[in-house]
Length: 246
Image (cartoon, rainbow, N blue to C red; front, side, top):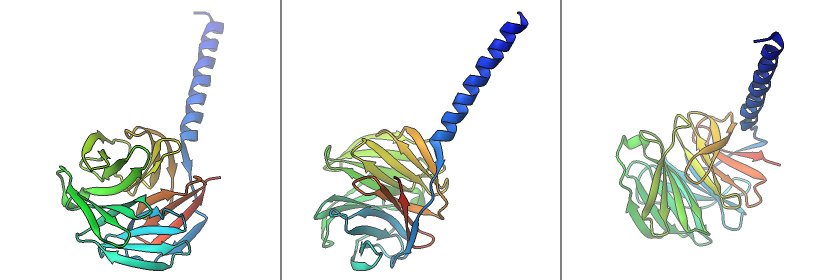
């Protein structure tokens, strides 16, 4: 092979390698929070914005309590849930919520006054402390997306009556600890506590973008309706972190 041909092939390889490196760097970005607000919630392990976006619903895995807090982090009200180890919460509509209980693998639907409407137990095995970790709801398709933390890491899809439709194994992180559905772009934001990373995935859990964050034990994630702000709670610092996405 002539030297010019060899040089040409090497040049093509360098160009392809450089493009792949740029793509990898572009899909793995760092996010820094702009605000950190301490919450009156011990060990917050999940959150979602209220239906009117004037505050947040937050769950505590320490005392099995749901808290309603305003946009300044002040408690408006709270109520207990029958069960232990709350690990995720989602808003269904302006009067209805759903939460997950890690150890018992249960999904509980309640009204915003704390009255239980429905409860089901999912068919999941594994270690008690490696169970359900997050829940989010798609109001258009009337589907729930639920995470199992690890051993195995799973994304479960349920219909509006909490019947399981499918389950997908997740292999992109050390664990999974929070989830939010973007029903505008039809994808999921999945949080990993141990990897300290946010992953954007399709609705079957296939990742296509990731963001590194520096927060100890991030365990709950949500976005505002305009998708301009991202919110995360830390089980370790009892704080709410705000990220600007614009």
